Amino acid sequence: MRILLATVAVIALSSGALAYCPPVPDVAKDGYQGNDLQRTLCLQNELAQSAQDRAIRSEIDATLSKLQRDLQQQKMLQQQLQTELMRTKPSYLP
Image (cartoon, rainbow, N blue to C red; front, top):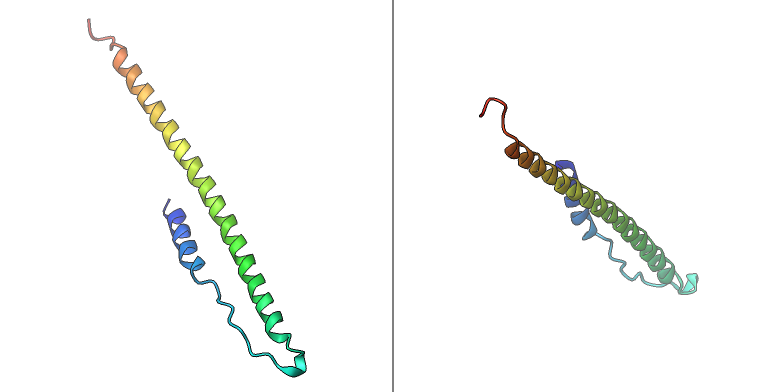
């Protein structure tokens, strides 16, 4: 559980650190396309990172849901066991 929480914390902290894609001065010899190319590549990297973060979050959400279902099932089984134990009389009682 601690590992899961640590993973969530790392993702939360890293998602805010996405690179900002600042404009770069164009140069005439590049046909004034350097800025567009660098910005496009930067935005592509941001998009890839964002997609990866969403996939990880989705996996974590699925794991948390499974853990919650398992915990609920364990609680129900415990309650059923306690109910059964309270219902049956020990053999040494009249």
